[in-house]
Length: 358
Image (tube, rainbow, N blue to C red; front, side):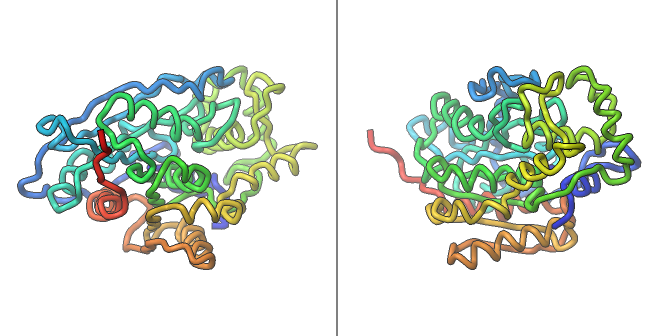
């Protein structure tokens, strides 16, 4: 879910860096809803078979937060739809939960009339601060981790309604990119889709804003392992995150990725362009027609507004119904409100709550 034709690094840097340091996003806090009943928060580890053997050494047992609705314990015969939520770049599930004021916002949504469902916040933070929710031998296959490993875990450990019509996928910023990317490909798994302020929608160019290209690649060339990237600045890490996800190279140790420099520049940039949802959305129109509902939103002061609007316009051009809103706010200022007052109510109306026959 958190963290236009602008470069991805410009976007990521501007969203997450303050005075040269990564800063926790500031989000407005909704008031506590009177009478809201508590949800149960469980901290679990979900094994990623799809991540095994990744060349970057990213953990295959990933932390996740599972939020069970108020009636989960008192109604042991009841099953629930599940919402899979994807965070943005540079943070994990735990930090995003704090930024969007979970579980308060989930409790508030239920108290204001949203039907009860399970919400699981997945974690995809990697050696370079983000997987881009992509499929790569270097980072691991985070597409299948979300759509297969996490879903299988939830269906086997909790009282879910194990059907695509009862599963929703939502994400913000990099998570919005992940929701768009995975959502377009895996309509066989998910029945509802909500894309919040997605980053990285358009093809981008090479380079790190504010950095001399020669110095940029010299700094990266000095790395002996992914762990050495800890000493790099935010922009360089973001560059490596993109390259490890979109231009992996199993024959190029120690980082196992290619950068847009020298003879490989055009080839790498072509690979990056191939991972831009606005470039490949037309290939997945049939899948997008399968959704019970698609929601898209973005703030009017968000630099991602133009590309987010383009996605909406493309879906409209194909006659694919989608709920689209440009609300008043920045990239992060209103996300907690959106979760409480828009995202969960959207899934409440979109997903199937029909109990499976025994």
